[in-house]
Every structure is written in C-alpha cells, then in structure tokens.
Length: 363
Image 1: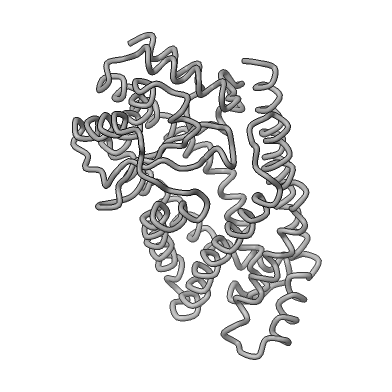
Image 2: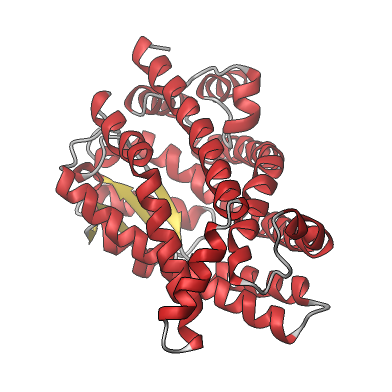
C-alpha cells in the first residue's frame, strides 16, 4: 500500500470515530442539559398549529446539528478529498450537494418520525412492531426510487455511448438471466476521481450505472468483471438477504427502545417517548445500536461479497481481468489493501483488496 493510501485510510478511520463520538456527545448534552426540552417548548410557542410542531422541531434541531458538525463534515467530505487529489469539485458545487442531500434527508426523517409519533399514539402496546414494519416498507420503496429520482438530482444521466461496451454488458446480463432497462453513464468526475459502478433498481427499473471515471480508464474485460460481481449479488439473492438482516435489526432496535425507554428517559428527566423532546434519545439508541450491530452486518456482507467474487470469476472465466481491475481500483480509490484485523472488523463491509486478489489467484 502506498504512503498516500495508508495516510488517507488512517485519516478516514480517525474521522469516522471522532464524528461518531461527537454525535453521541451532542445527543447526550442536548438532552441532559434540557436544551431539547427548551427547543420543543419554544417551537410549540411559536408554531401556530400543533400539526407543525414535529416538522418545526426536526428542522430546528437538524439545522443546529448541521452547524455544529459543519467543520468536521467539510473537512471529511471536501478538504480531505482535495488534499489527496481525489476530487476536483468546486466549493459552490459541494454546498449545492449539501443543500440537496440535506433537504432529502430532512424529508425522509420527517416521514419516518411523523409515522413514529402517530403510531406511538394509536398503538401504545404494539407500536414497536408496527413502526418497524412501516420503516421496513418505507426503505423498500426508497430503494426503488433512488435510481429514478435521487441519483439524477446529483448526477447527469445518459445512455452509455460506447455501443460495444453496452452490448457486452447487456449480453453479460442475459447470460445470467437478468433483464436490464438499459446501461447508463453518469458524470462522476465532476465530484470525485474515484471509480464506481452499480446495478440498481427493482423490476422494470433495473439498470447498470457506470461512472465516467471507470468507463474511461478500465478495459471492457475489467468492467465486465465488476458488473459480473454486481449481477452475482442479484442472482445469489444477496439483496433479499440484506433486507431480511436489516429488517431484523430494525425490529430489534425498536423492541429494545420499547423495553428500556422508560428507564433511560427517567435518567434524562423525560416522562414519555411521545414527548418530542425525547427525539435525541431515540437517535442515541440508533447510534449505539448501530455501533454494536455494524460489525456483525459487515461480517455477513463480507461473506456475500466473497461469494459474489467467486461467481463473477466463474461467469467471466477471466481472473487476469479481475485482478487487474482490483489493482486499478485500489490505486484509484486509495484503498486500504490489507487493514489491521480490528479495522477490518469495524469498518469493512467488503473483503480487503489483497484478500480478493489472493482468492482469485487461488481459483
């Protein structure tokens, strides 16, 4: 691994830990010092209709957190990427993306928590199960909308102009019995110099998306190796398995809140989850639960990624292209090729590059 890759990776790990610790600190202080209650009472005081209290409170707290977290966020997503020559995005474009992603996140958060407080009110005994099912259903709908609505808000879509590559990708999909809407390319390079590709969508929306940073620098064989891996996830039903795992995690998280919230709320001087001032506590639950469950989810994800790699190598029968593609991705994305086992345990949802290359060599 190059010196830049090592330094970049270590900085990313450190920032991730700092940001998580900082978020926990903000949530704890915001609630324990009574600021959440003050926010809630002030919002109620100046909001003309009770139906607007939740949207107004969420907006106020979201803006406050964004301002408090702005230095870390700006350094992590803009300064660091430019420092290691991984981005050429202008500050004005970065701010536009921040605004768009902020609005999208707020709308999603508002839908989820409006449902949370409504279901909590009408089903005081089984709310944790009803809310879990709603969140799972909503995430399924969101996954279907991402390639159609969300991605075009940040990148320009167009059909792949390289007809030979397009036909090759469609033929590869047909080989594994996948019907594609089409193959698209996006102007990834206006934001980052990293490479990426994806197979997204459900039903008739299934499509391949290629970043121009990948399309222009990789051979057709190497691109086929990448997409064979993505198609393998679909054929091996990894998406369904991940949905089941994430659904279980969601149900467990809400059940944990249901069983322990009275005790936790009492520690912060709050009486009920239905009090909007308890919103930071709900967020704190999910942050801490995520810290506990993420390594387990990463472990399961790494197993799926290995199986997808193996199937991709079987379908393409071209380990040389797979290995050269991995070498290029590692260099272009400044990947940590061989992380410490602890780093791998907590941060990696894919096997490290060196492991994937060695696996290919051994087949």
